[in-house]
Length: 568
Image (cartoon, rainbow, N blue to C red; front, side):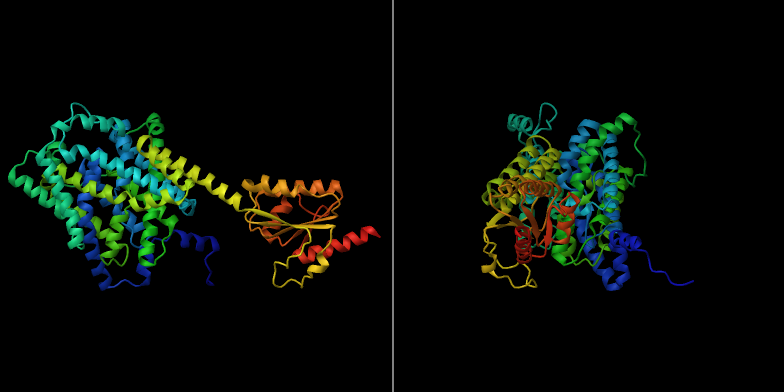
């Protein structure tokens, strides 16, 4: 049987969806690579352990669900993903959405929404939408990230200070701050001291021993101090009970059509934020290593990870930038390090439940306070505020909607404003320059020599279009092109510097062509690329109403000949 080359479709599928784990193994994976990945995986596990528990607790669920998410989600993201170094697990950005979903739909609704998010992410990957997810304007990213940071910190004030509230803590930011301010007289000095100690240890070790796992060291120290001195502070065990030994079995949540409809918006929000976070993390990893990730494969892996985590009772999974960066700095060689990180967390979960129960909530609150501070992107926020009014507006609108309304609403409105701002800027960049004499040299270096003196003809007018000619600029350009002066016999439009023409702009050119035909004016289009010409022709900009030339010189020469023929 003769050897058959794989079809183009199959090659394209492999290029988009082959996991990086397979790529790394094909390249050759030896004992030295494994040793490096083991060290990196264990290092990341040490960082992920307190962080996964803290994020889960802040999200309104038990700490074991955060560990389950890091174990199942982290393993699947590394095994199936399109990035060599991505570490998956629960992320601080999801705290707001998860907490709102738990409050509205309960744990069953949260798991169902996570399953929906997983299905949507996989669909987005297979539809090859990964490249489009990256089209989120930078001010939107900074705005919603800073907003999430504010909400995370506000959610931890209760545990940081050990406050006692008369009722349930409100979810919305403004009522929350009012309730917390009214309970300031109940501050627990022991909780305040532990949270301050944790923050000091993390920041201190980051300065003097940056290679040490500051978060884990801080939580262990606070736990030992709390247990040794029997401090009157709330712990993981006192709020959630001692976690059961072992690992849960997979199970589908019970749900009906109404539950599915109710959970769908939450799932869509999880998928939107998860795609942004995971691909942003992969881009950061590429920048640190020089590697290139496969965005569509990464979305499919994130979807599978969310489905897998939900089946075991976990919460939302995404790529975690801080843990991914830690993985790279620890010397990871490939996705095996992320799989080892998941295995190490599994070992801790099934053997150290009683120790986990002793951790003070104030200590975990201190961990999240540092996370919120790191997420705030203060320098980027300040630079965008100084950049331009448009960028500042997008930033502030996204930030305000995120903290006072809804994260998804903030992203959607921010992207819409960013798109409008971009279109406005692009429309202002489009220029139409009139050259009555047609005296400029040809745009193409290969075009015949253009004699400016010969072009000096009052019967010919040349308009040059510079920039993308699209619907945002169509009315402005049309108002100029419509001014076909009396006495002109020929009209030349130079598209050599117009790389893009959309349907609205092509229709506007067709209108100019019809107007010129009524006035008896001959029309040439010069320098149009094949793509631009095809767009124009698809809207009726064809002969005999218009003639195409390679450049202004050729168009002017043809116009003079045509005018002379008409005159004889």
